[in-house]
Length: 163
Image 1 (cartoon, one colour):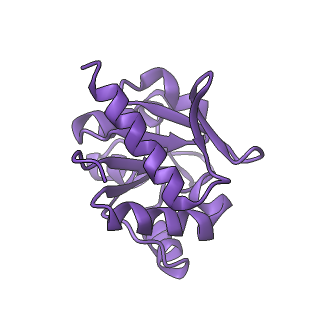
Image 2: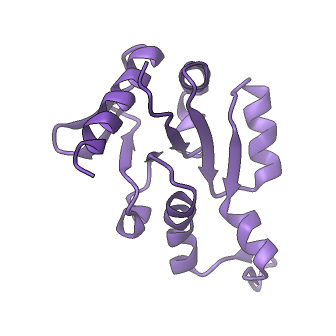
Image 3: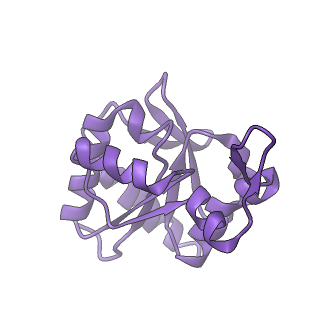
C-alpha cells in the first residue's frame, strides 16, 4: 500500500451506473486501502444517494452540480418549467470542485469537462471498459477492482515525483 492516500473522483451518470457492481467493489477496495471516494456528478443529489444506496456503493462525499448551483441561486427556469444552469458554469463545476478539494484523479465519461480541469482527468470509455488519461496512460476496468486501485496508486506515485 502506498503512503499517499488518494482522493478519487468518480462520475455517477455514465461511469458508476454503467457497471455498479464493479465500481461498488472498486470503491470498497479503495476505501479499504485508506483512499477517499468522491462521487462528482450532475445530480440531483437525493436521487444519486438513493441509487448508490440501492447498489450498496460506499463513498465519502457527494458533489452534485445541480444542487450546488441551486444553493448558489444560479439555476434558471426554462419556459417548460425545467431548471437549467448555464452551460459554461455546468462544465466548469466538476473541475472547480476537484481543484478546491485536492482530488488526485477524476474519472468521467464526458470530455465536455476536460477543458476546465487541472486535476488529472481520466476519460472513461464504457465500450472498452478503460479509462484514458493520455495515449498509453490509463486504467483497465476489466482487471480486478484491487488491480485498478493499485494502478491508480502507481499513477499517483509516478506523478508525485514530477511535482
